[in-house]
Length: 261
Image (cartoon, rainbow, N blue to C red; front, side, top):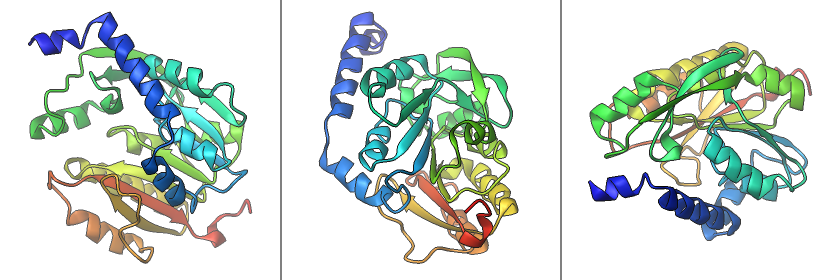
């Protein structure tokens, strides 16, 4: 109880933000591994959208690869960290909004741990029921402005890669995209698998796609070959309701689909 109360104090918050900034400023062996992995999606001089950028642990990797990075983040505390770390760097743009199916505003539930704040109450209820994140509480709510992927593309250009990590709100994000892009990633959790499959279905309507996946924080695609939608869905279905699994789905649009090239 005392530990829980301590985490709500002002001094604890300052200490945590200081540690976060130090960690993001430091280039670690894992960062080097991530750079090697993401280099297959993010070319030097390309454009990368980081949807749900949090405090920028991927932003620094994308910038290191020489990309122009548009970091979209709705949490004020994370926006401050992003601004302090990257605002002076060439090629970095911060969009202090959430991303959804249409422009406007929506409510976000702020968690004790910022990486699991979510705009999906259904997702929160699912992970609470399984105990996936232990004693994490979603104790605060805020209304935040919402933009769409289509609007971001109109403003910043067509991205080479979109990283989407929004804790159960992925389908709403994907519904705001009406054109193919080269590639993107979606975080998935087995207890919310139907949402992931809906994302893939929407993307398949936009063009010819192939899918792959990576489990946990491993910086490696699990399949040697890019898979058709039915093949990918079969693999994902095998993870349904498994509490020991999470990861990211990667989607690549086939070149013939990319009419803007």
